[in-house]
Image (cartoon, rainbow, N blue to C red; front, side):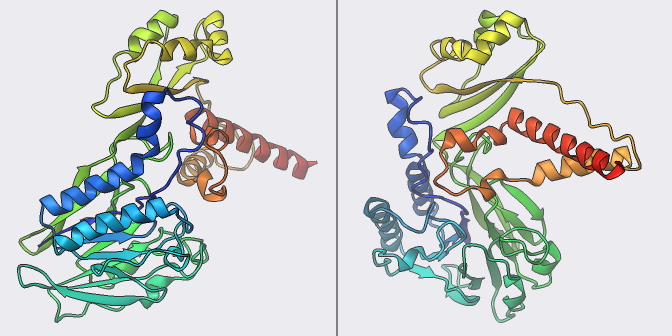
Amino acid sequence: MKFIHAGDVHLGNPFSGLEGQLPEALKQMVHEATITAFIRLIDGAITESVDFVLFPGDLYNAAENSAHIQSIVNQQFNRLLAAKIPVYLSFGNHDFEADRRQHLPWPANVIVFSQQVETKSLTVQSGQHVAITGFSYQTQRQTTRIIDDFPQKNHPFDYQIGMYHGSVGADGLPYAPFSVGDLLSKNYDYWALGHIHKRQTLNQRPFVGYSGNLQGLNLTETGSKGYYLVSDESGRLVPTFVDVAPVVWHEVTFNDVVDELDLIQRAQKLCDDEVGFWTINISQKSHPEFTSRIASGLALEGLRANMAPNVWIVRLNLIDDYESAQISDTIDQQFWEESLVQLMSSFEVNDYLPNQVPFFVRDYFTTSAGKQLLRQRMTELISERRRSHEN
């Protein structure tokens, strides 16, 4: 048995804010990046003759979608129909109720999960019986513990797979909160998770994890992106990552940069098989004249003019070496530092901004420089609050 687990495709994501910067040669590729990644997934499903494909939420970037995007989805799902490959689809927080908003009819091979937990079943080419349990979001902020509605594994099935769009967290959080223990208690053979855009494994046996998104959507979503091709290996369902993103985001820090020539020579060593979008961080300790040209944008302009056609420098940031906050009162210093690191690693500014906020506004606080500023401001606020309390 083989199947594909692909979370967070986000078809139609506009990469807002980049259009004015990009050279013409890259604009069309960026505009179609999520579509290209999606078509590569369909190609892979057909080539591998998979038994089915799972989309655990956020196939679309929004609930309202153009006729063009819907037509592409139907064309590609009809390709799977011709190959006798069923599609199991649920909606998440981005595409909540997308099928209820003047959506084209789904091809016959597409099984859409309702807003209540339900189980679908099929018999695959090997003759094995498989159950797939999932749900679609009831609201854009799914604060209830939907995991409680998932049944225990039904033992007449050879495999039971859970599709779940959500995140680990306490009751009341906005994205169908759950714990890994909640999932494991159901005794399923595989959990295909969606919502988190970074590929990560929460448990190995049985596998519980996020495939990440198919295409990085902004400069924080760095590295290879794609889907999991899952195979039956001696009774275990084991995922293998398949890279399909046509545009790859990167972030790199250059230390001790002497001048612009040094910067250009280092940057010219950056390369990609696909189109590469790079954020470059440079220490404030560089020469004042050089840092002034970086701050004014002149260094970025000159850098872009000297790069390969498939390498685009999105940002050139000046950064300070972050100095740990010093709390000189009853707060334990180590506890404070660990708590601050934990908070900043889990904070997702995009979760608090509507989709309409343009790229150039929303992306700053997702860069290293932006996160550094947030850390510094949080430290200042803590100190101010404590001084006020003491007074």
